[in-house]
Length: 143
Image (cartoon, rainbow, N blue to C red; front, top):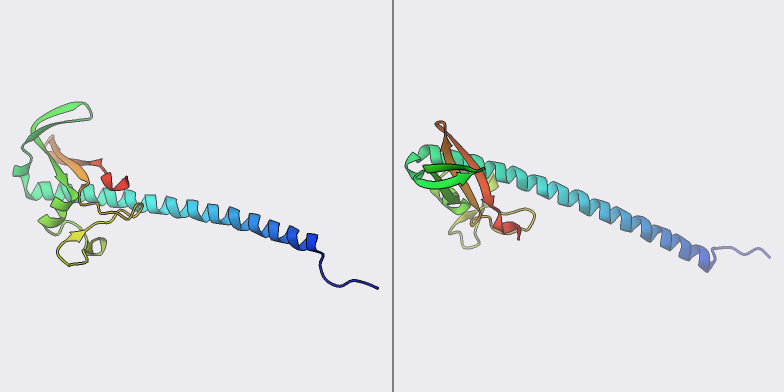
């Protein structure tokens, strides 16, 4: 008499193979997701730096501090700003990038990697050769 169906060993082998394939797939998907979130954050940091430049161009009198940038000392041509200061100052960010707090009292940028507020992150703005530059100093929302 011929037996129909699979043996227990065959079923277990298929289950083990499927679980290995699923594990490898999930690790790959998670890696791709993390890379895309980091790319979004890099783009957001670039927009913060651009917004800081626009803010400093509109308010040149704020550049009244001394600082060091890449080993070069600048007297009275710098300012360290928080992202919150730039957001609150006006329309330097696209509205679609900002979220509104639950109570509606302030707007915010969210770090896509950590899902934390970026309002306390700092950016340094400085003038060199009559041009205004900015560099992100600290992304404290990453910790």
